[in-house]
Amino acid sequence: MLGLARSRHRLTTALAALGLVAAGVAAQAAVTAAPAHAATPHRILFDDGHAEEAGNADWIISTSKPDPLGQDSSPSAETDWTGALSSWGVALQKTGDYSLKTATSALTYGGSSSTDLSNFDTLVLPEPNTLFTTAEKTAIMNFVKNGGGLFMISDHTGADRNNDGEDAVEILNDLMSNNSVDSTDPFGFSIDTLDVSSGYPAAISDSGDPVLHGSFGTVTKSLIADGTTATLKPSDNSSVKGLVYRSGYSGNTGAFFLTSTFGSGRVAFWGDSSPIDDGTGQSGNTLYDGWNDTGATNAALALNATAWLAGDGTSGGGGGGGGGTCTAAQLLGNSGFESGSATWSASSGVITNSTGESARSGSHYAWLDGYGKATTDTLSQPVTIPSACTTAALSFYLHIDTAETTTSTAYDTLKVQVVNSSGTVLSTLATYSNLNAAGGYTQRSFSLAGYAGQTVTLKFTGTEGSTLQTSFVVDDTALNVG
Image (cartoon, rainbow, N blue to C red; front, side, top):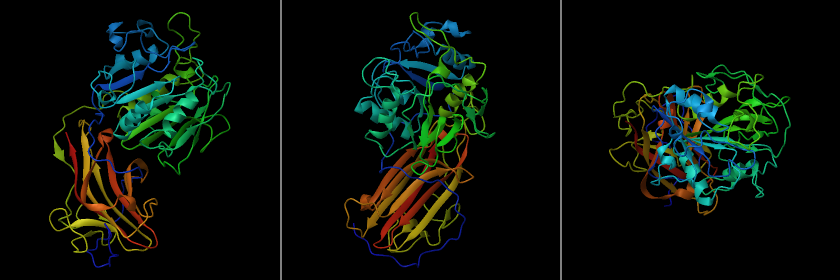
């Protein structure tokens, strides 16, 4: 729908911009299968459907699959379960805050199987050695986008344990760069084609980071024994953060352990499988006890990261997260803008009852851009999501009209993001543009369940080019928790 450039005679509001920022891909309507975060127990799925036991690898928490409790329902020592990851699994199981399963078949999202990703909070990929199918990559990426946690563990380049021509470096890079959901560097990093023979990569100094300083302990160093690193690309995803670096490296290069976000979900990457190897497993495998290596704190790193990925907050990890009660409610104030600028922070004139556009309901709405010249408009509101709530559904109605005639170039954009109190982007939910213009309002929905127990800011940022207007019109917002 073509629109005319508008004049500045809307209601004005001069407010500071706090923000939820969003840079993502195209519009997605209602989320149908969002993982429930911050619930007790946290639900963790370990993948064993992609040659994780090939060669000398034994990357399983137990030989009992899908349920490790079939081997021992109350493990107290890592040898109570059999597998090179049994120390990891037993440590989580002993807290009473985790439910663990193993997937041995194709990964799905929104299906009916007991190991479907919709039944879990976090997926662990412990050095996969076969490529994920197109359908699996779609499932994994949508799972993360809708609020799931993804733990990717690589090994050095050339570690092709099943001799099929693919190693974990290639397989995980393929997941990130060749999928149907977002192949434009969605997590903000790529895995390096390296074989680093040895070292004890050191953690950065950040006392507030929940992965480095969680309830499972403080991380100081990790172990690299023939592994790789990653290159960070914060220009593609500003949430990417290196936590542990190869000696002599910092910033955007040589990251051995990192975290990021995508949509409503969280991501962690580790450059070697040696740190998660506990030295015991099925007979015939050559294993090494990196989990208990005295020169590193690998157990704390693995466990804190698992807790964070599964939905624990920003000040600690490991267990709990679902205490208290959750009262079903709609949390956004002045959700239809009928009280003008109340509870919202916005650029001057964004919240309006102008007749230049139409409200979906009532008389007021938020109108970002539409001037036909270089303009940036923002709209934001902070909100606290109760820690006991397992669902948090953000929705809003969006109308876009434009005078742009291109069918291929996004000249004007609207980003929807989640930011913290410091303005750091926690998640980019979506990016819309002049290419999404259409008549009428369309409802957009996203899960924010991963932010239970936190105060975050929802932020809309409209950026318009130098000529030809695009109007981004928002109305009837909601954040329903339960």
